[in-house]
Image (cartoon, rainbow, N blue to C red; front, side, top):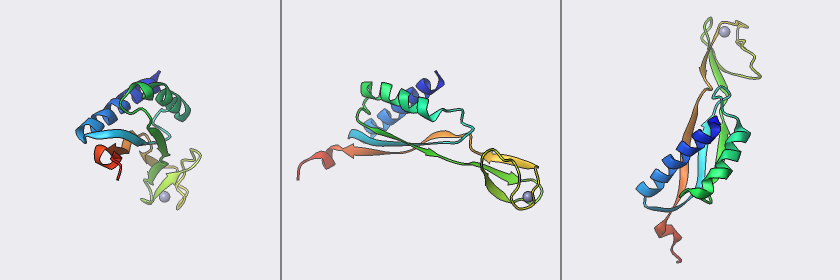
Length: 121
Ligand SMILES: [Zn+2]
């Protein structure tokens, strides 16, 4: 399963960040994914729940930001977001559009609880 290996590398990336920052635990893991990333959100979330307990990230919440498919018109140069896979320029109705974004899957940021913050005051 594609999503399982994505989650595996995501969790090892975040675990390394946790160690680098001498953190206590990971609170939130934020990722962004575009509609052309080939990632199924539901499968991603299932894979996350299955794997997170066995890692340093246990207890963390996964937040998925879905980014729109973006494009630029080859005729008028307008930049716009594509909705419902309608590849038409909203300014000039041209169909000569070039997709410029929406295939990404990447880690945006993580909230790490550090040991200092975890101390009782
Ligand atoms: Zn146009």
